[in-house]
Length: 220
Ligand SMILES: C[S@@+](CC[C@H](N)C(=O)[O-])C[C@H]1O[C@@H](n2cnc3c(N)ncnc32)[C@H](O)[C@@H]1O
View 1 (cartoon, rainbow, N blue to C red):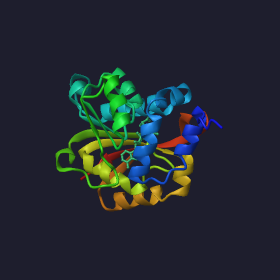
View 2: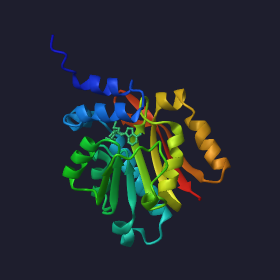
View 3: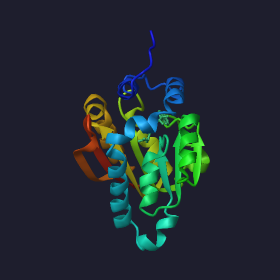
View 4: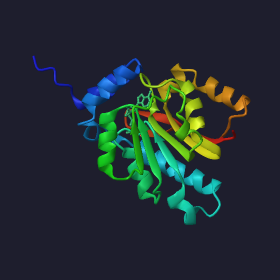
């Protein structure tokens, strides 16, 4: 029998993965061809997070409009570049994307909105020296989700972001409920690494479920 997977099952199956790098690489290798078609119809999170990034970066940076093109942004787990396209549309031009999957990064290259793209980066692992504290802002959507990355990866996002920079992250609601994300966020604040500037609970993400969005300022 033909076991061709229906689009919505790709999304469902992705949430059941085990988060291991080799599993991720294999899964997204297969999904990269149809990912955009499968998710874009009702994926509100990408535009929502781009707007949040814009709002908070502009509040955070003096002469924001004049400097917009120079603000260094990293899209963590950028996939095919769906969020990057929205960020680019808002006027940002120094957007880098990092992801584990070479095939997803290949698609992101085709989008033409990123300055640099790097595949093979596992956000569970310490950040490589040339990316350490290299960014004014980090954005991460659709990655702190079931079957994907651990809440402790928040440490690596902070390692990418310069002191005084902004991080904007989505967590799907079930992920927030079922993981220690809140504890990691609290711990990092106690350690003086970051401060929570705003959060948006049960905000638009996809038509099959909302997400919480977290905006942090990195302190050190
Ligand atoms: C559901 S897709 C989201 C892609 C994009 N951010 C979006 O919203 O369309 C999840 C992405 O996370 C990447 N990913 C999964 N585990 C990762 C890890 N440990 N480190 C870096 N990227 C990872 C996958 O390769 C995939 O591109």
